[in-house]
Amino acid sequence: MKGLYCQAGVSDAEPKFVIQETSLPEALCSHLVRVQVKACGLSPLDLKLLNDVGIQRDFIPVGREVAGVVLQVGAKVSFFQPEDEVVGILPLDSPCSGLCDSIDIDEHYLVQKPEKLSSVCVAGALRDGLCAYTALHTHARMAAGHTLLVMDGGSSFGLMCIQLACYHGVKVFTTSHSPQKHAFLEQLRPSVGVQDALVAKVIPVYTGSADLLPVVLEETGGLGVDIVIDSGVRLQEEESEETKLLPHKHDIISVLGVGGHWVTSHKELQLDPPDCRFLHLKSASMSFLNHEVWMASSAQQGRYLHILKDIVEKMSTGVLRPQPEEAVPLYEATVAMETVQRHQKKAVVQL
Image (cartoon, rainbow, N blue to C red; front, side, top):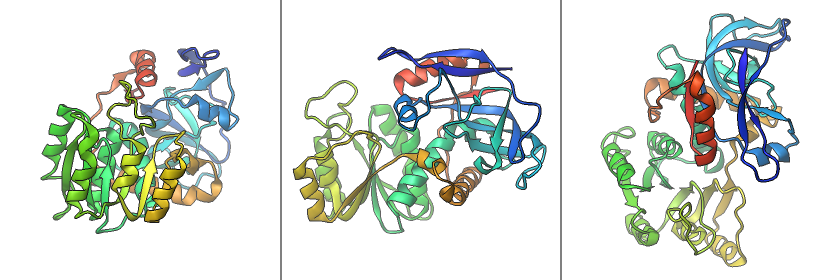
């Protein structure tokens, strides 16, 4: 069978994605599950992260969010049996590409997929759901009555954060990065969440980010928000085409309330002494969002599985409604992955 792999470029060259022949061993290890893949999500590869954790290969497997049907189970597998529908995320060091016809994966990386939840939907949204859950529950410790500012709420990750927060009774503000996203978020306001928990304000930043602070302060009575979740940060005052819509780090700290928490996706964020002093005055805190840590320690395995189960259940019941992804056929996977890597977006392949 064939799988999709990344041939890491030399120095700063762009990585190359190639189809490679691969095979699975005939004998299945005791805790492994053999899964026939029905759909696989494609997300940008973080080659620097792989290098930092010591994973160095000539060909790196591509496609880790998978949904499929169990074909065979190892002798000591207790959670699954053949013909179960499952979903999960392959670990960083997995030798399998999620775009193979069949893969072997440890049972502790899988959860049952509800029957009415489509494989394409869950494979395309599982990573964003995990990131949203990690940011809001694990880092920010959100609770009913909190106020939350989600940067770029029209993105797949931002939408997951909004829906999850509204479900828990959090008052949500969000920013929009284009007229299309603004119109989309405005349409969601009457229907997102439960009871009276709605998106309180959509702030258009594509016309200029200068309005962010006064709008948030006006909406919160001058108190600021309890939680900020960004989708990237602009470190310098100079604006490039890629960063002009991102908030400056000082703007984010300014909108935080007393005791607030900032969850950042910026991997190399640096805070200057004045920024730290500002955080100290507010008794505020900051944490880095890295969902890969769940699979870095077996001590977190139980919590990780609980999170995955909760995410797929909320998708099944309509609490989380991810943006629909148009499935890419397998023969277009290489081109799709090149686009995903270049533009830092995502896609889903239907096998």
